[in-house]
Image (cartoon, rainbow, N blue to C red; front, side, top):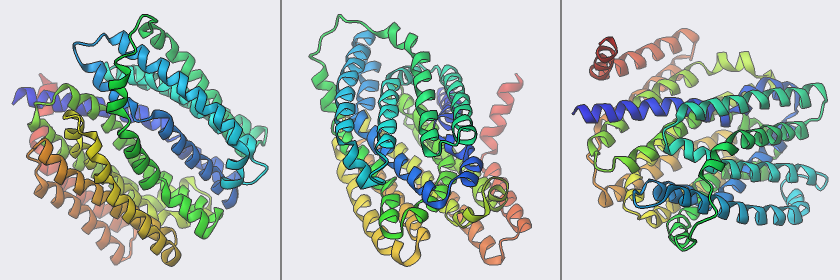
Amino acid sequence: MKKNSTSIKNLFGQSTIYGIGLFLRKALGFFLIPLYTHTFTHNQYGKLAMIYLFSGALITFYNLGLNEAFLKQFTEKENDKREVFSRFFLFRLTYSSLFLFLLFILSSRLSNFLLTPGDIYLIRLASVTIWIECLCGPGLLILRITNRSKSYVFLNTIRFTINIALNILFVLYFKMGIAGVLLGNLGSSFILFLLLYPEIRKFLTIKLHWGPLKRLLNYGLPILPLSIIIWVGLDLIDRWLIKWILGLGKTGVYTLGYQFGTVMGVLVSGFCGAWTAFFYNNPENKKAFSDSSIIFVRASLILWAILSFFTPEIFRAMVAEEYWIAQKIVPIIAFSYIFFGLEEIFSAGFYIKSRTGLLIPVALTPLLINISLNLYLIPRYGIMGAAIATLFSYFLFAIFSYLIGNKIFPVNYNLKIISSDLCLGIILISLTTLAGNTFYQRVLAFTVLTSILGYKERGRIGKLLHERRF
């Protein structure tokens, strides 16, 4: 029992730190919302959104699903860690450079397809930035797998600060528009690589065997279609469809609302970053798996409640008035990310048992339903329809991951507790909305939710306080 408690404590301790690191790394646009919404029109914001969609899809292709394969090989005791890292990094440097060369050749066509014929330079700036990001990835993975979360946060804090400064300089002072945003991203990514290089150099060796590369690819490549389905099909497709159905302006508004929901997504990703290292290192501790799912849901619901119940106040403080319509999708998008986190928990068995290929059909049905729902709901309900499609798709993804994953790697998850906690959040926000959604009603609903969840967690909270006292 003590081992289980310690494992969970370490997991969520690491999750908190990684959450901060990932938040600083990925939520830059959230902190720059006041600058962007007071500087860019809806169409300009929509164009920036399309560039970020392109970048998100590109980094998925760059990764080739090999991150998880590298983590698995790196944690296997019989492997030489320097050799595993070098093989991974040098292979990534080779194929990502070829991708970058191809993107420069195709940049004119990509500009015509995604933006306008005169935006070739924007496509090229984004392509170079993602190439550098791809080369930073192995160094950041080393920090994760060796549980050096403080270094992870420190480096991302430096990068975050530099990116903020460069955005303000290029966008506000030099009036460079979207190009200024991309130059800020490029500069901060390059500095991050320079800071990571000593860590990368420490693990590099030219004396290595390339034979195990085949095993790396056999494990990782089946994850690539899964990554495309999740990040391109489930996470990005709605904004592509809104652009083609409703136009760039609505894409910009939806993306703004999505960014607030992404605050939830980034912190969920922080948990997932710690979770990957945890389940590879503790595959036998199934009790911790079950307990972690409950703690994750309750912690996520509290963050979701902050975002959802106080969205009007947050928008008035940060967002230009012409973008306020986007606030209605924030609770839905944020709730979707709770199901995304549950899917990551339920799918651990696929990775532990090296059955990652099965995740493709698991994700394929939610993808098809997501596309169908978006095509049906967006013309009828606009951006709200896209948000509902996202929520339902992630819900199905979590359900399918549980049903099939639990056959491969049985874990006694307490779905009754998880479901009751999630329903509590849905009931409270629904009642608040129906009653008029006043500030005091939302404060009351938030207080009720946090009190009930805190009462349910009183045992673990009391134990944690007792341990710290002594």
